[in-house]
Image (cartoon, rainbow, N blue to C red; front, side, top):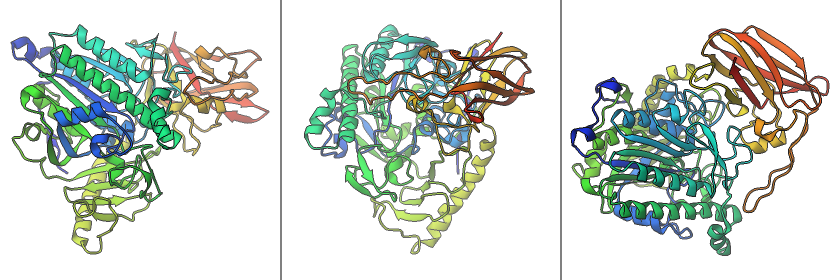
Length: 599
């Protein structure tokens, strides 16, 4: 597998921004939607969904027609931000802490900031929430985001539900009015207004149309009236709202005279989540999937092929032109470095610059072999859910064991006919590419990211069960699971104690803002247009246990206690932290929320 190595001046402090030298650099706005597949827009033939503003951008852009991402969101974001295979960065899942790129990774935020740009991030980050992993620690100077991977997941503010939520604004939880997607676009446009005259990079990563499908009735009702099933109608409603905001953004750029010199990119993060129903083998049963097999999580085309529209009028990147040939999410970082004349670090990239193809200097993207995979496991598993791709061929393996199929994607875009037996030489060649890729990736699986506490940059730090490492098939990653009290008692956090000292470690069943005793409950919650949330399950907890380094302590939990508090000495270094609440004599669950503060 060939990778491009781009070498530039290394020290950010020594760099002189090109804009300061009198050369005008373009602005960049990168819009990424969550769970909107290739077929979830009318410009790609969807007969149900109407997306007039996305269609308009499609008509004005250069389109990468064979563009691929990972089959799930966090891996896509890791690859997009770093220009490298997600597995190379230490990301292969959306859970278990396996969604956090290692701290030494260089992101687009770093690249643009080092090049003199104002950098901002809005919406869904999902690459770590605390120092040194949050967007605010990864080169983005202005950040408005929710916690974790979905509004309403466990690291997010309690009871966030898309409407009038509380989000992290530059590290502080702040109340906002309005619908989540509207907030992200509003905040982006406000930031752009405040940075006119200086180039800016805005990464606008909407959490919609990912579930819960809490769409306002005015957006989903037209689809419900068409006879579309309610969940899909609500999914389409979320996309209709995104489309409205894309229109607002385009009109704003025009009004501010920024259209010509702004690179505007629109893309999705994986295959559709709800736009099509599929069988276990990926064959579509209902809905619309642009003729593709598979959806989100799957290695078939519909799981990872997505839209990528690029508009940059002053460079001739416009006019509704298609660029064929394999392209991928990790190409955007070197492409933007090329288009914006930006310095980069000396890290090896898996992506290549597509600037010549976008500008029309080359007819199509260069020939090469790319690989996508979907692990979604605590430990990576060889052969699980992968696709090896060339411009003509797709070698696809679904499941844990090796039973790969070969498809001629040019002759069979729906991937219905396995031609491995008639093209054994192609099968063997592509399997060889996978074996080399796996060997290349394997060393990266051993070095997982540790949650850091005891640093000057962030104290205290919140650990939640969202990032538990556990072999359990049970998962607890959203606030519904906390209310349900999903019991996991073998989980731990890989942690790094940044400095030696005495620490206050607070174990909780509920988050601080819920203000509820460990053995208490929270009321059910019903809000308009939102999935109802049940009353919280009660665990009659009597004891709490903490194990970290040489510490193994158990204390009593009294009725009315909202937290079990330990004060312990810890040495600097990497270790594991594990907790238990005991109830009914000997039964245990882990503490869903742990607050760690250096005293």
